Length: 246
Image 1: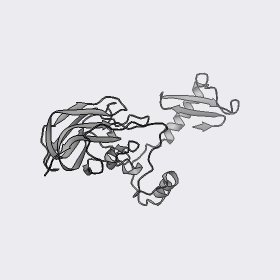
Image 2: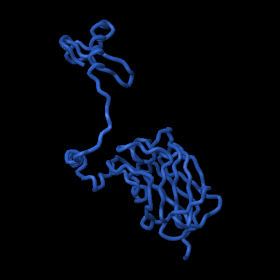
Image 3: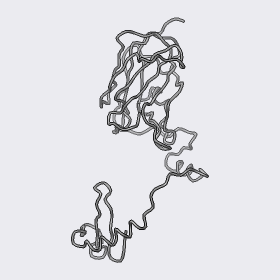
Image 4: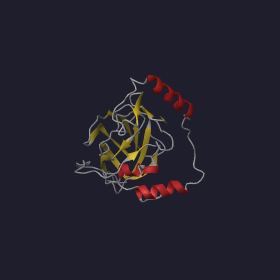
């Protein structure tokens, strides 16, 4: 808020106001709130009177929204956003016995963030630079987050692999997670084949079964996040097993 020769700015992180003399201190380097409490108080009252709380709205015309997407990403809503760029190497899911990513299919996802291209398919595309993220742009989806996968054939499933997002962030990284195996995508058992709590780790983490379980479909159920937030995210999810003849 600015009035005359004074400018007040609220630091939302520290929940405090700063005051600057915009004539004597053009670069706004010195906070003079302590010496001018009366001026600050007047500006704060003006700011509070003029403030209107943010309101959630809906699009009546997406033309401007799509134009802005093209300007930022070079894509429209029905096209995937570009892969996030990250310098240096990224970790991958490796090892023997992995179900080929080309054979796995996504059956369903409890949510995905379409607006920035963080689609559920990214979790099984074999590319650790892409990310699946639960919905947050059009309403916050909360735990549990679920993905149902078709392995493409019946397997003797021996374990699972989880690779957290490979950028600098941790939003959505799995903590408590359950894995289910079944012959049908509509009839998973109530008890998971394995339950594990993953840690804050950028390398692939394992969730191995004590006893292999036969099935074609897998449900990944994310119960919590490493930071305690509501999100879920994954760079890659892998399944370890032996293909059986049908």
